[in-house]
Length: 362
Image (cartoon, rainbow, N blue to C red):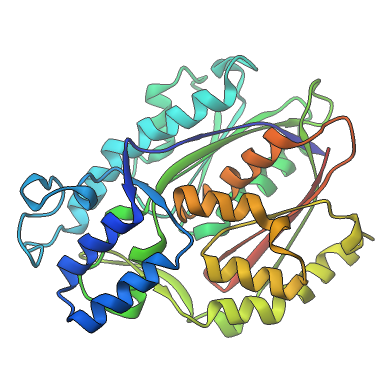
C-alpha cells in the first residue's frame, strides 16, 4: 500500500469576485436585459464567491485588459497559440509553488523518485513535466510521466498510478502535480455550454507526495480504487481542441445522471472491499458545481454538512478541474484527528462520463 503524506496548493495572483466575472460576461455576451438578469441569477446561485485566474482582465476595466483585445466583441479573438503561450508562461511556476508547499521540509527535491504531471488545459512538447524540472532541483534520471486530457477525475487516476508504483517499489517517493489554467479557454459565443463553463471554472495547482506505507509520520493510507464509466453520459461532458482554444461540453443533464447512478456506484465500490456506508467518516467529493454536490447528497441521502469541505472549496475557488479534489483533501487532512481511525471515500467526475473513486484511511 501507499500513503499521502502531504498536499500543497497554489493559485494565481488574480482573485476575482464572482460578480465581477458576471459583469465581464454580460459585457462580452451582449445579452438583452432579460437574458442578463437570468445570467446574474445563475452566477448568484452558483455557490461560488471567488475564482482565481492568470488573466487579470475578468476584474479590470476594458482599457486595462492584457489577454483579450480591448474591444466589446473581443476581436481579434485570442488564438489557440496565444492561449498555449500563456499556459507555458504561467503553469510551470504555479506548479512549482504548489510543489514547494507540498514537500516543505519533509524531503529534499532530489529524493523524489517519480514525478507525475496532470493537466487538460495545456499541451506541448517538451511539456509541463520538463518545464517544472527546469525550475526544480530534481534528479536528472527521475521517472516521469504525464496524464493529459482526462479532466476533473485525473488526480485520482494519478493517485492510482502512484499507489501502483509504491506497491512495486516500497522505497519510492512519488510526486503528483495537477495544474489547470481553465480560464484561458473562455469562449465568446453565448451557448449554454460556454455559459456553464464561464460560470464554474478557474485556475489552480495542487501537489501530493505519496510514499510507501512504511514511511514514518502521519498520512492518509490509500486502500482501494474503483472506477466506472456511464456511457449514456458520453455526450454530456466533453473537452475538445479548436483553433480558438479548448471547447467544453457540459450538459445540464450531468447532475441528473449523477443523482441517478452515484449511490449504485458507491455501493459497488464499498461492497467490493466489504465496507458499508456507515464505515465512511468523510466524503471527499469533487465540487464540479453546486448542482453536482446537491445530486451526490440526494443520491447518498446524506446531509449537506457531510460535504462541507467540498462546498467550501467550491465557494472559495470554483472548479479548477483536476486539482480541485486535492484542495478538498488538503482541507480534510488539516482537520483530521490522526489519533483515531478515519475512513475517506473520494470521487471525481470527468469525460466519458467517468467516475473515479478511492477509499483511504488514517
